[in-house]
Length: 78
Image 1 (spheres, rainbow, N blue to C red):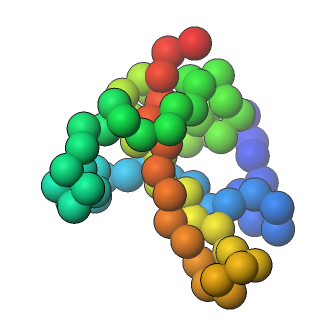
Image 2: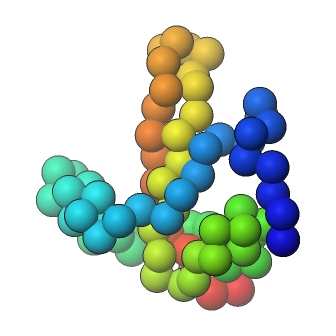
């Protein structure tokens, strides 16, 4: 599936590395199961070849803070 990640309304997305996930979970004293969920059937998850258990890193520009903000989603089986 081709997904145009350059579209202005679609945040930049990638599968987070193991190091990024470890840093995130240690920083916030949580497990990755506490992250917001993303379906494995989501078009972005499919385009990234993400599977259940992967963490997707999303970066988008915030109109409120006027800078790029990073957030994470865990992929779950649908």
